[in-house]
Image (tube, rainbow, N blue to C red; front, side):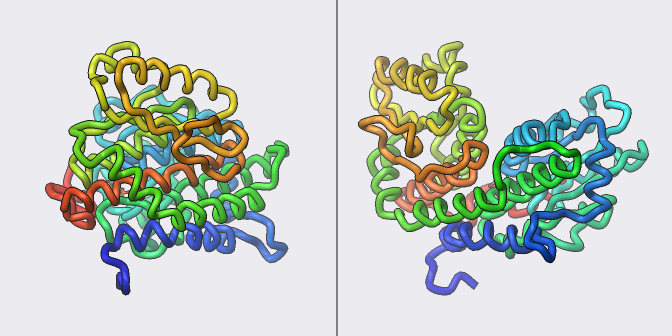
Length: 357
Ligand code: F6R
């Protein structure tokens, strides 16, 4: 039930701090240490390479999952779009483990890959929100998202849940392999949950940003570097699917290789600047587009902020910034769609689970 909320999407955005806290609880052992089932852990430890298969928002989560797994657990990861993988399969490693990320657990594009993977005799893990879903039943292992039912077509809380679960999977595997990740993930996830709360409490500001940048535009660009780039891809998908504004996410350095030609007087460019190592570079990209007339909206983080940034997120661990920086992008998309009288929860041409290939 959406209760007093005008839309499921807004309700589901608001649930995200609670979802992250629920995930921490569900993945704790009796000593309150983060844990995953032993058989899943063994499968992860035995794999020489992980292949993440997903579609849409879940694919965007997979891109960040790769960062988590490679940085923490030190296992090489490839991330593939499910619909491409079937006929364009890369050379597989000797001991692959396939990870299917799917909110619904019913996406046909992902399922056809799972069928093929099982034919080849490789192990598969599904990360899903729906216990008993097809992808969960047909895989060897399942990790649940515990996000609660997601009703709005545009995925929000499942994405943050996917990131949190993949962070936990990564840190638990790291520990089992004797790798010191150098921080307490459980504590950092709690800090991130609080930071998400500050963003969902700042709705008036998000609505102002949507009105200021997106009321009349026909297009919008999202730029970022490193994980900020992947969050930008997700921000662009959210915006286009519910507001029908043409939106694209780009790696900050890539814009000048062609797309910058589209920048006109007033074109909104939403820039994410949460990564210390590339902070100067992304700010350089903002100057490049601003010099060509773009109207930049910089979303940065405490400690990296500069005068003129439109939104400054509370400081969280650098790997966990996507869990927080995606929230304003979800809310800005929501309000942009609302201002354009779009059907937020049921955008045109889309279905909640895509059960055709
Ligand atoms: C976007 C969206 C879709 C889904 C995609 C995969 O907001 O909802 O892009 O993410 O169809 O769906 P699942 O995760 O159910 O496999």
